[in-house]
Amino acid sequence: MGEKEDEKYSQASQIFENFVQASTCKGTIQAFNILTRQLELDPLDNRNFYAKLKSKVTSWKAKALWNKLDKRASHKEYKRGKCCVNTKCLIVGGGPCGLRTAIELAFLGAKVIVVEKRDTFSRNNVLHLWPFTIHDLRSLGAKKFYGKFCAGSIDHISIRQLQLILFKVALMLGVEIHVNLEFVKVLEPPEDQENQKIGWRAEFLPMDHPLSKFEFDVIIGADGRKSTLEGFRRKEFRGKLAIAITANFINRNTTAEAKVEEISGVAFIFNQKFFQDLKEETGIDLENIVYYKDSTHYFVMTAKKQSLLDKGVIINDYIDTEMLLCGENVDQENLLSYAREAADFATDYQLPALDFAINHYGQPDVAMFDFTSMYASENAAIIRERHRHQLLVALVGDSLLEPFWPMGTGCARGFLAAFDTAWMVKSWAQGKPLLDILAERESIYRLLPQTTPENITKNFDQYTIDPATRYPNLNSSCVRPHQVKHLYITNELQPCPLERTSSIRRSVESDTRPNKLLTWCQRQTEGYRNVNVTDLTSSWRSGLAFCAIIHRFRPDLMDFDSLNEEDAVKNNQLAFDIAEREFGIPPIITGKEMASAGEPDKLSMVLYLSKFYDYSWLPVVSITEHGSISHD
Image (cartoon, rainbow, N blue to C red; front, side):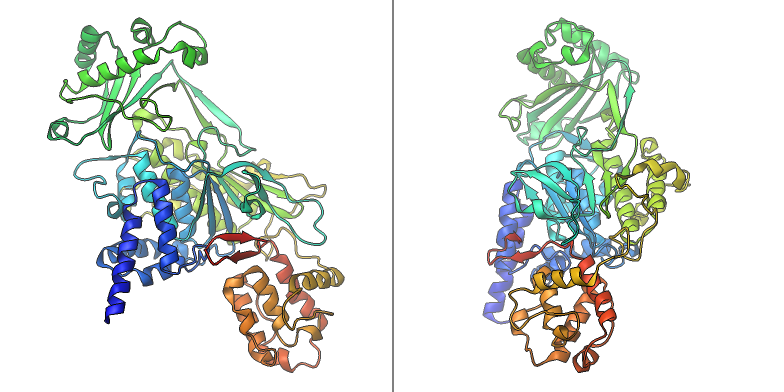
């Protein structure tokens, strides 16, 4: 290896290490942009990005990470990333469950875009991890990004740290992530589909964002309990009044702090003396308390209303829970004292200083909330159809099923739902009948609220997106297709077919008329050198017109300017090969036959070009010299 190669190798390794070690959302984005620019990688090339990144970063530390990701990518369910190559997915929300879903869809080969309205990962609260989630995160290289990940018997991680890990993995796998972008609503395809077929899009804030032109056929809501996706009814599970308090204190990582033992779920029923002593000494009356030592000292407890009133935390007693816990009825200073006093007693006064960590509002990181009511979506997915465009809509994370924090169910069930959703998207991409897709998803969803660490499959090594590898005795057909007809929503005047056609992305075969097709072809090839489309036969002999259409939508697939008009055989064969490989459009003849034909058969040409017209949902994407997106 020469001196220049040594330097290049060393520089690539250092740039990648900076990305791996980035400790904030903004820092990660900055490091990733430097990485892609310095290594001349195109972050929009989702199909090849990971392979190219791997080839350019070859340090031993990076190789250890590649080995883990390669092992995951080798699952037979992904079919080497070929399952969903023509599937475009929009995920609303960049929390742990949204990112985990994005990673699975990327392994399947889908084009995945995540939108997140914030640009900071600031949630200090700590998540309890079931054994399978620890195993799953290790398989994605979590320890390479966060050396302290679940060391020894630790079974928890802060939300912030978990987001960072998954954020980096998603970026490495070619997931496109936009921060400071707020999803507003789904936009239906326009009624006028005559000149160009515009599919499902979304409205964002800011409104002029290039992503507003992005067309997708799968959208997944991962934006929390107040999900913005329409069409899902929620079920409410009410219990007796339950008021939770979370508190994060600064962890200075001193020897004294390290010696303090964690409390992983003490409930009144198991240790009545502890809670009685706490009440007698401090007047604080709790039902349970948890203490995890992470990047902060994290406490979460369920407090009894009367003690909150007695200690002046709640000012007035109201029957209505919302009024009871509204900001005007809570004394913030007394709440801080209550949380600090409970934490002090629970740790036997061993923590040397209990100073509150600061949240992203610049306030002490303590919160009080009601979890008397738990919400769950009645259904996990729906399918919408409008003007012959179908859209698969799904929920994951808290949007789907709100967690019950004393059991630590949020992350585990969120990940299970992410895998189940990826399995559904795979079925969607492979053309499975619509009602069969929905029926299977609802059958699997019925299991989710019942899952515990004890009743899921124990062999974590065999876990894949296939639900049968995770749920023992799975009955994936307990919900029948006729029971989910209401989840297939259409406003069409004519009855919609309930089966998929040979074109996965369309509900009906193309009815493109030759004159409309010719107009469309002329529009797509306008301005290309040596291309003059006047008909659907002889204008195509040189092969340049085919290449122009492909280049119009995917300029990354060929260097159009290097093509020679005289080399018709090569041009045609290049276009036919790319169309088959990238878009699944089989050729009608060979490049040689096309070039030598006096006049190609018009009917065959109409049928072949109609396939490109059917793929005109593809956004026109060009890549600027700075690597930013340009949607035309």
